Length: 147
Image 1 (cartoon, helix red, strand yellow):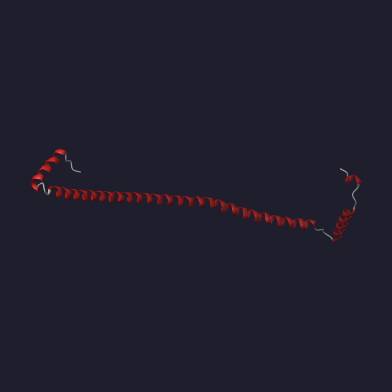
Image 2 (cartoon, one colour; image 1 turned 90 degrees about the vertical axis):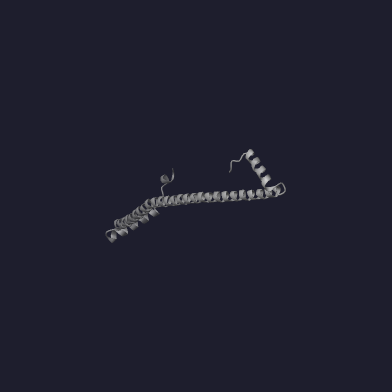
């Protein structure tokens, strides 16, 4: 604060003793001590307030940096989600198209098989029924049953 040495303090004390007198000097010294103490406390409070404000500014800066980082991460996650969703949608659509085409092929194959299996005249229908019945009724020969 002030650069006052011991010799300067002795000079100030001697002048105060002469000017104020020995009777009032202790009371004046006590009052000056109280005033200096108050001034030091006031300066300390001001320093703490300034430090608090600086810390709050740092915290506000840190908070804004964290919010920016959170926004960046959120944006990045949305972009990643969209980039993953698009191929999945395309794959789903292609699978649905493939499923529909397979179903159409199955239906058309069933129709073709059904048409191919239908006999052209009714006499062939009766002959196929009779041959089916004879195959069912024919007993198995002993050579067929042994391994």
